Image (cartoon, rainbow, N blue to C red):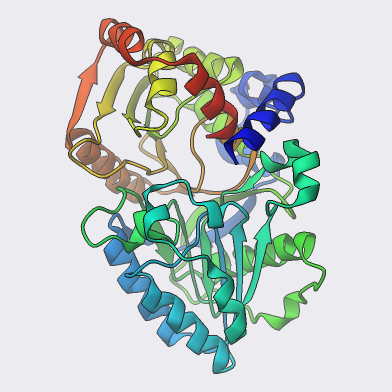
Length: 417
C-alpha cells in the first residue's frame, strides 16, 4: 500500500492538481468587497443554520449518533473517510442494519482506504462490507483496484468528508470518522469535533451534495426527490456558507480560507493538524501578519507525521504570533479542524489547513457568521491550548527541527498525509 502511495507522490511532484492562487489573488485580497461578497462570488452556497450542538468527545458523539439513528424513519445519508467496525461501534452498525431491514433508506459512502485503516484502529477494525447484506447501500470512493495500481495518481485523491443527514431535519459535519480511534475507544478517542444542526436548510443542502457525490461514483444513480426536504422552521437565523469540494461540488476550499485570511482585520486563531503549507498559503498568512493581524495556532504532534511537521515547524512559527505545540504523549491525538477569524467567522468541517486539503482530497466546510458562536469556539480553542500544549518560539522550533525533523516524512505527508 505504501509503495503505491509513494509512486503516486512522485507523479504529483511533477504534476499537481492543487491550485492555491486564491491566497495571493487580487480578488481575495481586495479591501473593496466584504468576505460575504467574495464567498458568494466564489461559489459558496449561502444557507441559514441554527447554533449547533458541539461534540468534542467521541463517546458522547457516538451516544448521540445512536439516538439520531434510532429516531430515523425515512432516510440516513453518511459520508466518512475511515469507517470500520470495532467493539464499541458494533452496536451502531447493527442499528444501521436494523434500520435498513425495517425500510429506512440507508446510504453510505466510505473512502476506499477504510479497509486499510492506517490508524491504531487496525488492531480492532472489521471492514463494513457486511452492511450490504442487510440492505445498506454502501459504496467505496476510489477503492484499491488493479486499474488504480496502473494509474496510482488517482489514489491520492481521497474522500475525506465526514457528514450525516437524518430524515432531512438533522445533519452533522466535523472531523470524526466512524472507527475505533475516533469514536470506538472507551477512554482514548482522538480529541476531535462534530457539530450537529437541526437546520432543515443545511440538511437539504447536504442532501443535494450527497446525491451529487453518489451519482458521480455509482452506476445506480439516485433521484434527489427520494429524499424529502423541509422548509425552515424558525430556528435557523444564522448566516452560513457551505463549501463542498469534490464530485458534484463547484467551490474550492482554497477560496474559502484565502478569502477569510486575506480579509482578516484583527485576529486568526486555528488548530493545525498536519500544517504543511505551500508558498501561496504562507504568503497569505505573512500578509495578514504584516497588516497587524494577530495569528495564533495550536499544532498537533501526531507520531507518524511529527517528523514532517517538525521539519517545517520554523517556517510556520515565523508566520504566527503565538504557536503552541500540543504534545499527545499523555493525551489522545488532537485531530480537530477549527479556525476563528476576527471573533466573527468560524470555519468547521473536515478540512485540515494544509496543502493536501486544498485540492488533493474531497472536503466539506461550513463558515458560520455569528459572534456568539465564534466566542464559544474561541474559548474552546483556548482550552485546547491549555491541554498539555507548550508555547514555542522560533528558537524552540529550530531545535525541534534539528532533533526530530524528517524531509522524507514531510514529503510523504505534504501530498499523502
